[in-house]
Amino acid sequence: MGDDTEEADVLVDDPRRCACTQGGVVVSIHRALLDGTALSAFSEAVESVAPEGLVLLTIFRLDPRYPLTPSFDTAIPELVATLRRIERRFTAIAAVPEFGGVRRASLRVVSRAVWTLAQPRCEQAIFDRMTDAARWLGERAPDGPARDLATYFHLYRAADARLRSSP
Image (cartoon, rainbow, N blue to C red; front, side, top):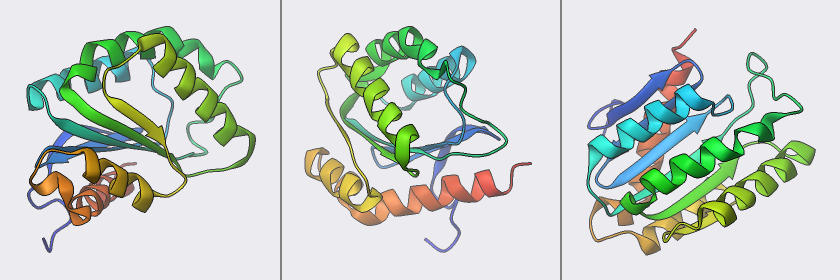
């Protein structure tokens, strides 16, 4: 796995977010809030990957080009609808905010509200570290590459490299 994009299928690729997949794992990095257009694109991309058995690691990263607005929780109904549409494809979903303070606490509250309203059958959790999230997902993943921590880090590097090369 020399090249960070080798063997990683890119599901979503734009300056605000990137999602890559390989071996039953989807890793997405979001540096902007999800809006209706982004949610639709992500949903369609996930639905094209596999019928079920995926695990999802979502990294939230703040970027000054895409500031959080005070009303970022207005996307909750769209997030709930999207999660209901795609959750059957996942056995587990983990989120990792790469920031702290009030914004991290707000993201946790919004995430829990979405999960409570959507009532997905898959397991969900929020972690402080990507390593912990990848370990947790690997324990819940079907046999294969999704159980290997290296898969998560490979996909993270692939998504991160694409975002770094975006304007």
